[in-house]
Image (tube, rainbow, N blue to C red; front, side):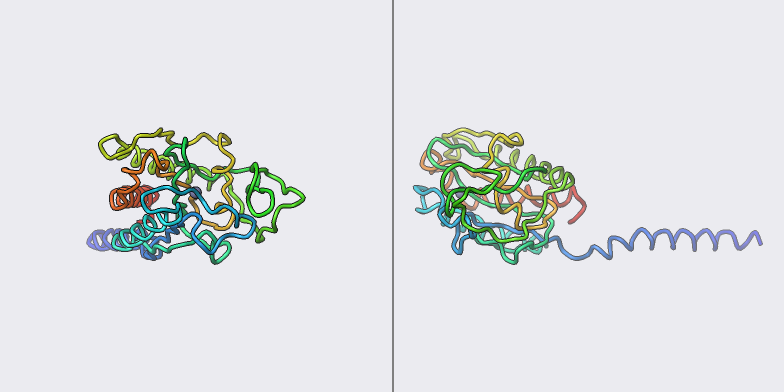
Length: 250
Ligand SMILES: [Zn+2]
């Protein structure tokens, strides 16, 4: 019987190895990353008046956002990510994914910063189709929103905060005078410091595990920086990839 021992041990070891391998094999699907070009037509109902800033080297904010989005989609796909482009209107409503990232730049006097979804409170409501002050409850004249809105759980907030930190430190490393940045860098904005960002409607149109919004800089102060679409997209892509790896999704 003693001679059977090594065989049995080997069998147990192989079985254990297979058991360990199984979850990895099941999660062999590439992670889905949704990259939104902020303000790019078609717009989201209830926010149609929010056409974004302007005055960057490419004109409208949506055009800068589209360029960064498209470059990121290409780079993410090369890295084995199932990257999907989104316009301002999130389709399909409630789309699932590992990460949702919305690309923007700020208006004069603004800053480079990163916001993330936080639990509690609702998406923003505005007057009409998106003017006036952001409010957690509808105004009498707020345009209708698409429903059902998705929820931000504490787990989503935690994961989103982690992604935001990685994106922010990556952006900080290139947001330098040498790269043409002249404005402020505000990093990850604290929860509830900026309703427009922490309760961005996009966070309530997806079930992605991580939901973030990036202001790459402010036009026109940071225009020399904003012109560097390849640098900005590559840097944001690298941060998204490290984040997916840290979350063991890639
Ligand atoms: Zn914007």
